[in-house]
Amino acid sequence: MRKWILLMVLLVSACTPIQPDSNGRKKNPQRLAEVNTQLGIEYMREGRYEPAMEKFQNALRHDSSLPLTNTSIAVLYEKLGEDSMAGKYYQKAYRLDRKDPVTLNAYGQHLCRQGRFKDADDMFHRASADPLYNHPEMILTNAGICANQNEDPAAAEKYFREALGKDPFYPPALGQMVRISFAQQNYLATRAYLQRLRKRSKLSPEFLWIAVRTETELGNLNEASSYALSLKNRFPDSLETQALQNWEKTQRGL
Image (tube, rainbow, N blue to C red; front, side, top):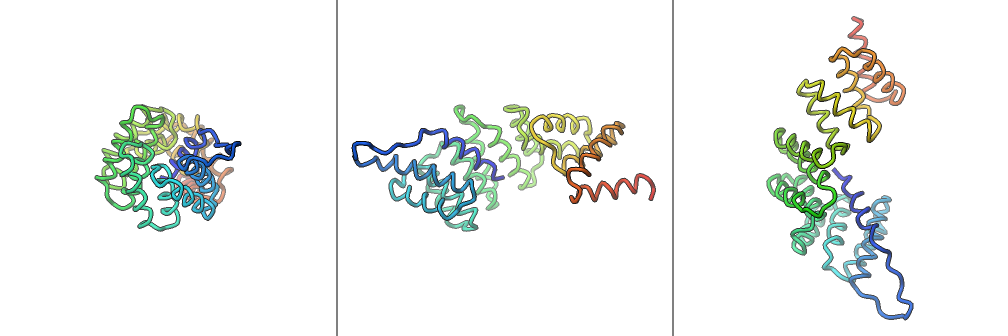
């Protein structure tokens, strides 16, 4: 749910660093706020929350009207477990710019975690509709995850498919479709999604275990054994490996 923070870092880090004024002139408050916000996001990415908070607060002192600054400090407050303060800054960021997709996406996730599913869905819908935003698949996947939390699997699957329509190899959406297809016992689809997922990232214990059972159901025992061996070798202490070993005993009738 929180991987979108990394995307925010990438977006901000693409900005040109601000150099000191060689003539000694007073810097523009907005530019100072932007620099402090960039530094704060980088500190937050590194898990250094205290200096991150200091930079965000410095940014707000220079210029409190930047949506990204308010969204960023809201994210940090939420990571610190201060939901009330997080909500305050999410709301402020939203008031400052009701069309910014980064703000809408972040605020949507916050609203979803608060159980305000309808409001969250509205935020995601508006964020993903921005034609200039480069990563709609991320927002659509977040909307699908929120729909799952709202116990609306049909809407969730629709969002995940839309996300894959934007990027057919987007790992979070692929992972969700692996789970959905396997639960529906649609093993051919499960295999196809797993194959795509493998092209972007190494399979986790969860997906290796799904792959073992999927290939077994499809009668491809050699591939099932290959997945099983990979699970045991790479994650010997995982719960999935334990489940696999118990399952193998059952298969042998022990």
